[in-house]
Image 1 (spheres, rainbow, N blue to C red):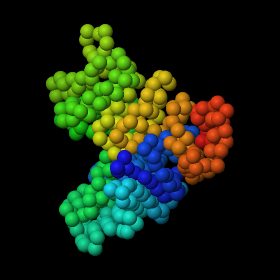
Image 2: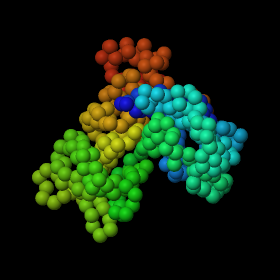
Image 3: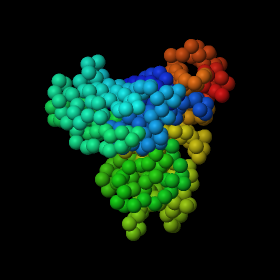
Length: 372
């Protein structure tokens, strides 16, 4: 990949007191419930939403202290994302405290942008610029201005535009079949919701505006569910819903007759082949037959997007490489994320594999940590 996120660092956010993760093309997070996996995903959602000018994650908290590590109202939260763009390192940092947010951008280690969110002005490479939009009371009752990434000047470095594009195209999801089934308004924005809402509208957009991507999605679903012959974004009145044409059936399958697993795999294929920079799928194994997990992992590897899979499934781990695995634990009040291939447990895991065991069995047995 010419452009990808190489590193994520989170400080003082929920259970993530100080976590740094170097990401691969495919990264698989595994660990028990309440270990902090979803908190890591939420940090990435927050920074991506900030870049897009939305506040869904922020609105989940009643006050700043609710999202600070240890519920400390004096804490300073930092979420940093480093990317490789044009063979250069570009890093975005979002700093939050109880009063405001501050955003910074570093290019090859040198700070080139600084913007306090309670000010309309921001500094970029020694010059002052202004942002346009003002949000009243949207930051825990405090006023703030939108991100500087929303309207960068033409003289900004190309790497900064690319970084903004990467952050805005991060897409994280915990797909729920009952939400995927819902019909959508044809006038709704063509974005897939966190739980898979609006899939029909999203697919209609691909069908009308990016037929090549739509065909990739359709082909990916057929490879996973061979009886599927055609994906149909069906429009009726002012709404659109997902229909599937299947082998041997005269009439297309409508949402109530499509299996939960097929709907989730369709949503995952749509995400993986629709031009997202980073796709995060929480518990992708749910409703999916274990025999299909290898194909699902292969689809994630072949996707043009960078991918993070968050899982509890030893069956899914059987189809990934140790270098792609990150073990998430919370031995006390703090989440710890370790890359398996760099951990002290890797020697025992390697021996376990040489003796005929699988990676999923190694995790389930406790050989690599990350179990209740």
